[in-house]
Length: 152
Image (cartoon, rainbow, N blue to C red; front, side):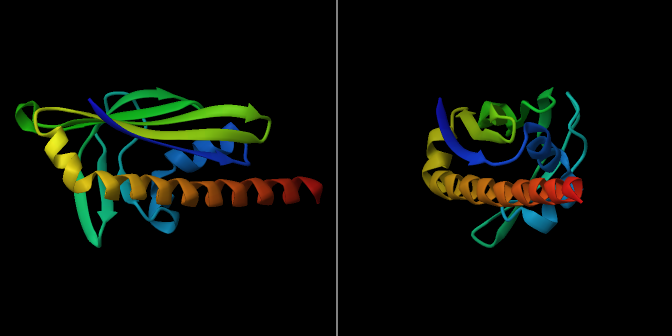
């Protein structure tokens, strides 16, 4: 098994981070890596995801595996004949009332996973990091706006 794991600390509540993560309609406005998701964050539903790597857009249709609001969102993408299986996961770990750690990872299995990761592994890691930073920016912007609105 191969995996890519990234983490980022976000200064926003777990609820704010969750809302950014599952608001698929907003992805094209803030997410430079997963530029679109169609579908719902509901177990067993099929998503239509678009990612952009190296100027190329790729579409895949994973199945939502696990949804725990404000904590965990996971899907599984597969190629035929067990060639490649990717378990993509977002975990939100609460560090404080308005601070979380986002763990963004993917575990790869299948008989061509090693070969495929040699070609796309580093670009995928960079995509995760870019998305994490953009999600942090979006969530912290929302948290700041929310605090300002409460103060007024």
